[in-house]
Image 1: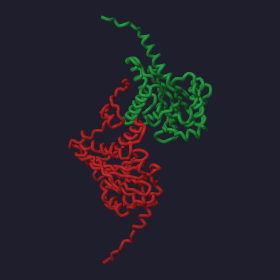
Image 2 (image 1 turned 45 degrees about the vertical axis):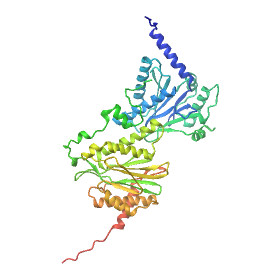
Image 3 (image 1 turned 90 degrees about the vertical axis):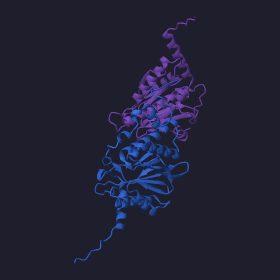
Image 4 (image 1 turned 60 degrees about the vertical axis):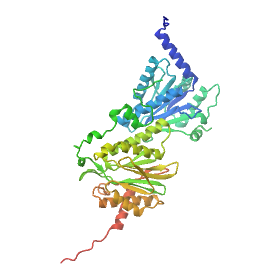
Length: 232
Length: 271
């Protein structure tokens, strides 16, 4: 009879975390910033498969890492939000609840499954001035092991998150107009692609949650609009 | 890799999602229909209509809901946008009909978000017919929901409209259609005023005229309530999206129609 090797739980967790980090580091980064009239989500993405998506009236999603995995998470988010909004009211669908649900589900996979998820996600919510108590925007980041954090102003996920985070910490200001926020995010993603800096309007995916829009506040910027803003 | 929030459903339909993972949320009117339900106490919507005009399609409805011979609501909205380019107009039992319209709206939004693309107008109409069919058991008991569906087809660049029957039968109409208790009169009115190349203004006039005619003949259809400032809903759906006629223009058109119809009553000589 063969005896299985003993591996300490710590070692197992460490190995899984390392595996997940490596997977995420291979991919590109994604930046989420608050600007004066909403929240801006940007990702370097040359393909037509989206990394950023609409979840609900005021909530958007961004994922990095393995597409099939974060896209599953995005769809789960849409199902969660639509069901909640149908059962209660549209204003009851909040980013915090969704980020918590992601945290639970991703943590569960991390502890139970052999292979951890190789993804990180952002759940962003834009404030609405017409709803007392809901005026503030929020950005939540959920990592591969289910750890969750909230971020004031901006958040970066993906391979070069640390490095871009320090760039944004130095240059981010509250209340940036859209154009400035776009340029800042663009410069950050350009820096992430340092080895081959060829980020152009064509291979950027940019979405907005616009505070003053009525109803569904999510909007995807097309390449021409984006080019106009970036002046390229 | 199984990632889930506890549900099993993987597709892109909200109705199916409810049926698979949230059965407690599926509206089920059957249990209400055990024969003890007094249909006279259920609010019913009355007249709605849709017809094509030069830029697309116009969808309109009066605002009254009735419970038997009583007024249930004077300002019910029976024409509802299901997305930026389509509308549903409902007649019949108001509760199930409004819920169906709400579900239809969520269904289209859900599909768009999951798939990253909108359904084609044909696909939307087909989806609605399936929802009407699902309501058949309730319809058999009297809770009939008969919507009209209309929208602007961005691929074919034209307005289109459909009517449905209780079995989910779906019929595309080429010109105009009206349904509800005053539907017959509205249809007769539209038959005479219909013009495929009508301008926005002419279309609005035809819609107000048809609704006035229906209100004139059918006691359950609400006319134009100038006293309370309650006007019918008239929506224009074109390539530019959906636009609702303002109360000012409704009142202006209504007064113009009144002026053309006013007669000096013939006096009968006293004996």
